[in-house]
Amino acid sequence: MREDSEVSDDLRKDAADSVGIRAYWPKFSAIYASGVLAAASIGKIGPVSGELRGELGLSISQVGLISSSVTATAAVLGLLVGFVTRSAGKKSLLLSGLVVMAASGALLARLDGFTALLATRLLESLGYVVVVVTAPVLVMSLGNGARRTAALAVWGTFLPVGLALGSFAGGTVSAVLGWRAWLAIAAGAVAVLAVLVAATVPRGTIGEGRSDDADAERARSAPLEFARPLALASGFATASAVIVSLVTLFPTYLAESFGVPTAQAGTLTGLISLIGVIGGFVTSGLLRRGTRIARVFVVGVLMPVGALVAFAGFGGVVLSVGGAVLVALANEAVVAAVFAAVPMVVSSARRIGTANGLVAQLGSLGSLAGPPLMGLVVTVAGGWWVIGPVTLVVCLVGVALLRGSVRYGH
Image (cartoon, rainbow, N blue to C red):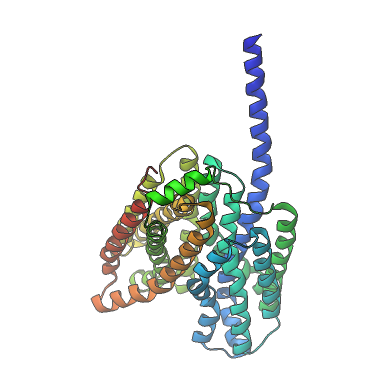
């Protein structure tokens, strides 16, 4: 009878956990989709840049500014939005961000002049920043433990998935229906998602699984508590700089070194970035099984190895692409671990939003600064080979910062 009772208790526990999982992942999926569609807004302009230039008479630099203004705004406002999340309702903020993106995206499809397009795009970028800073905070509010850690790691894949979606869907839809229809459809998708989030996602109340006394004790033991989120965000900036530099420069390298047509080189680079998402999902599984985040960060040393192979200038296209794939896989593994580490580097639950805003802001700064600086180094050195050694230095610094941010038992 005693054994039967124990078995019954185990069965009830398993059943409850199964129900919890079924309830958890639909909520997480709606939040994750918010990040993906936000990231798609960055990539949605590229496929229609030719139409914008031809129909509206815009220059290359004007189209580039319209496209990149989203990340530029994140680089300026990420930390500020993080502070706002400390007191404002998380679900309300996420919905506000989605509504702003949907409304400005719909307006974008109706405008003609550069000034109006840029102003509307900047408005859309405000919604983007709110979404990407608030969404992971909501993920943290869904629960604690290994499931949350795994979910945060999956969240770290939103950017490459969204960029790929924006690029591929934009190219396909605009080719059939035109660029205005594509932008309108993209805005409509965000509006539909806002309704889904309103119906599915609970109001965010962060539960860290530790008491106020534990928070206070941890704060007393870490007088430089801002240093750890700063180290995590700075390490994330190095990873962002590396992968965005690769995506930006690799098509030109393939064209110059191996004669790959520009269009094919761009498509191939997009596929490489998408393949890198696998690294994030693998990291999610490893963290759920108890692998320490500090060990995952060590994977970052594979990025310079891949860069050395990718830009070595010998071995042909296949070897070069293989090196780029290694960079993308290792990078996404590190990025996934960064988001999973955010709750571990703060002294209390109230500081999670601020830390996440800092990660978003410095990551965006890395994305903006990486390509032009790497391009400058290539020009000064007179060859693509220099990308490997420079990536080695950047990644060693980044891995040291990331491991240092979680050095206390993680």
